[in-house]
Image (cartoon, rainbow, N blue to C red):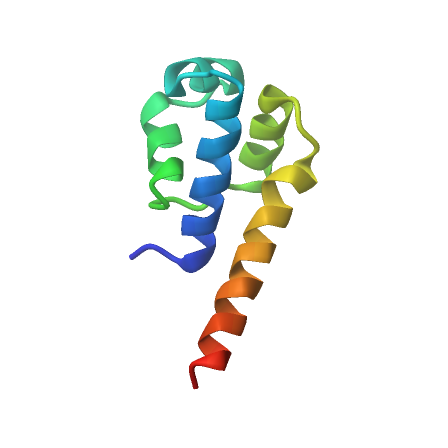
Length: 86
């Protein structure tokens, strides 16, 4: 089952990769990860480890916070939206 955090991270990772014109294969090669693992991350089916997050941030040339902050913002927005419907 996909967690909300994984779904939010997936969208962030996919956007950053696409913004840099990288294929999943190119990102996988740069991070020394398997392309299928990148695909699983981008579909929200896996949770990245801290080592994976650091490798992705380095390969995408962004601070680690740029991978994590959008996830937190999305989760907070989802929480507020749910609270307003209750």
